[in-house]
Image 1 (cartoon, protein in one colour):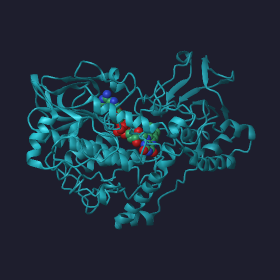
Image 2 (cartoon, protein in one colour):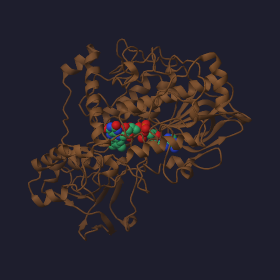
Image 3 (cartoon, helix red, strand yellow):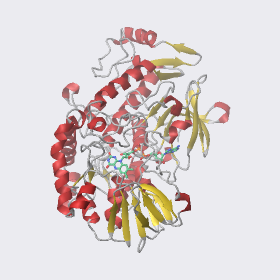
Image 4 (cartoon, protein in one colour):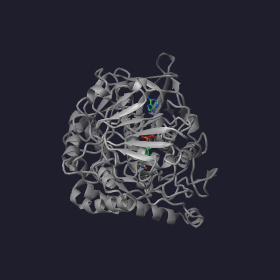
Length: 593
Ligand SMILES: Cc1cc2nc3c(=O)[nH]c(=O)nc-3n(C[C@H](O)[C@H](O)[C@H](O)COP(=O)(O)OP(=O)(O)OC[C@H]3O[C@@H](n4cnc5c(N)ncnc54)[C@H](O)[C@@H]3O)c2cc1C
């Protein structure tokens, strides 16, 4: 859907969304709710789902409770478990695509190979594996954890057995009766180890750094709970609110008072001691850094699996492979039939950055060579009308990424409204001063956080040791910072000319009255505007109930009316799903969480 004849016969769309995970599908829903139907979702794979399509390893599940790890505008009363597994989450995303009428917009098997900013025409030229198109605006939702990272291990190419990454599980390979090496002890590995240990002949886990592991209170959601959540939606909203609130209260310890996390460390040690009776093994599994510095992992099965007689721990990184023998840095040798890499993703060196060419002909990867940075986690200087979902410093250590995604969708929606109000062929370019100021503030706040002071190295940090991935605040703060676009932070570009923002703003302010203050800690990149933009009834969340009175907080389940509750096989009663081909009848933007 969408798309008109563009330059040279190429298809042209208003918005090209890249990726169909939570970010891309969420963007598509939000675009339709804004009344924009001239858009496409470009997805390289043959189905939607992103993370939850690609990670199908045994034991794969979310580690944030399902009632929080889901869209506020598409509540699912029927989550099967408190921490639902990958099949249920993937099915949920497929269902979102159907319920909100997104299918006509989605182009599968369309990998974006390159996109270039055309400074004359003010549009993006996009080259995909399925053809070319142009777009006024690109929303890049390619995911921070979507390109698996394989370490360079000498001898790996000659290994005669089976090799795969946890995010590309080979379901045709039968692990039964095999000697298997698991490399890495991150969030995926600790789910895989207990799931495959009973199957394989022998499992050897190669651990460079032990993680802190807390128990996971996973259980089936009872029929009574589901009934209540379907019949009395406030029970579901209350549950989500509680899950969200608890996590918001924890943030201060991570960002300002890491010493408070000592108590959590004691709980994690007790969790280990319950299953690991061997003091030598316990010593190997006890981290030497502050809990929270790396992501705190949740599992009640990991330590019991490590205590099994057929599971070995090599507390040393994999150094080289000689034939079918794996040699650890401490000299330990282990012969195996298969190697599974749970070694994470290209997070601070996202491959998509090499494929985005900006206004001055530089790639995003060039622009980010000293570290990723984006204004309010979304826009980058030199890349007009390009924004990213889950951009730099939007990750979370302890809560649901869907909260951050929905905040970014609110920002995206306001960005498009502002473009519309400016009129004509127009683009917004993030001012370098605004981007730098935002980034300086974020990095200054980072200095006290556990991620920077906790004594670990983690995937949160880039090659220079800078934390360009995590948001150093609450999700409520981020929501306030991204509620609307502050035009003072942008240069307005018009085809054939460069127009100074204050000129535009003054002209508009004569009609509109005083501009509302953002009031956030991270300032705008230009001098305060003398006037204001026209009041935008939707820009400050009117219609969605996401912001608490006084703008002080984030309601965890912001949409009460007009939400499209997901029921098996259809839209729940009273929901406002989008009929295929139509625009949502919902009342508000729906990104309340
Ligand atoms: C195993 C695992 C468990 C997780 N559990 C949690 C959790 O419990 N809680 C939590 O908050 N977060 C969790 N996360 C983080 C998770 O990545 C985010 O919550 C969220 O799913 C990211 O959504 P996304 O749409 O931004 O990215 P993705 O889901 O990664 O989707 C990106 C999409 O973009 C596509 N794409 C990439 N490049 C291109 C291209 N060049 N052209 C076209 N398409 C492209 C990909 O194929 C993919 O479909 C988990 C991550 C993993 C890997």
